[in-house]
Length: 436
Image (cartoon, rainbow, N blue to C red):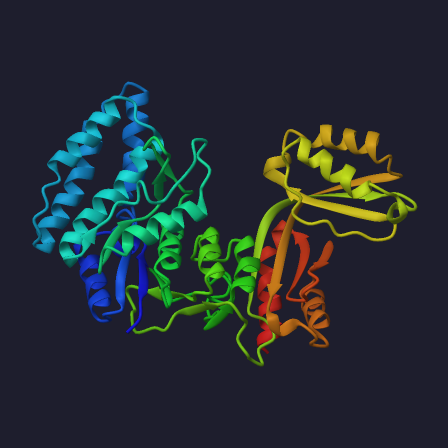
């Protein structure tokens, strides 16, 4: 007998049909004692998520437009779900309270959080579990900064009082009670926090895909599933956007050494992907491949650059002054390249280049735009001769020019820069080379 924390995403709790599936999943295993839920997602193509409807209500009010019809759609979604599930939950007072707060100018965080809040009330009644609100337990300070240790203690104390719980994800509160939300997808984080607090044996994250794939299926339709991946490997792939899990959800469970299991609500028989502290022992060289477009590279050339004291500090300071992240910093004896987001540097490029000229005094500076970064990740790459050669040959055979190369000290990933237009072709070439 153990403890499993289960989190269901928006597509898994979109309507009564999906909620019947979630109940079957939960009741099939007595260890599934703590349930975290998102707001109802899309039921079909062209549908609108509850969270987006709530945001629209607030936008209408801010622009002095009628919002009542939109709000009625939100209310009706929950009422229809109640009827179809055969549960009786009087949400009228809740609807009136939310409506009153809307008209008083409630914050966007408060309005957005009500989707999860209302859904958790309905689902708790449907399952016969206790409803526990995240407000007051998931803690933020006065400035809206998340407080992980205070949250852990509060959750641990409260959840010890309950045998089975449904809790809304996505939000918490400040000391004055005002609501603060995580970024979109933040219900994953709430599930992770609960898993840590109750010392769960596993954190199951139920969504609409059967775990992670080795590559984007839109690029590689027959991409193989990843059965096991380590936290470190996941972080590398998540950085490039290849994840069905909010990346900040990893940290609480990683700290407690709790595995995460990504599962499919619509295919509960699939084992999904298990995310563990240590990499799986396998003969497979790579775990996954992912890419992200729209980076800008500023390449700096200066004789004797590697011997120049304080160079890195000055260069990093320039980017910090403009609040620009340095994504990568590959360098050589007389060269250094700064990789940053094209979107973020847009409008600041000339100023940054001027600062580099004044503070670094380079012999030459080259700006390379429209760069795509491709990350090939796998613990099996370490100490494996020929891995880089296979990757570079695959790109050469596909006629793709490599503009930049960067490898982490762990030898767990190789990042190459190619032109944006070559993203899909590069991922396919690398995938096929290693699969063969």
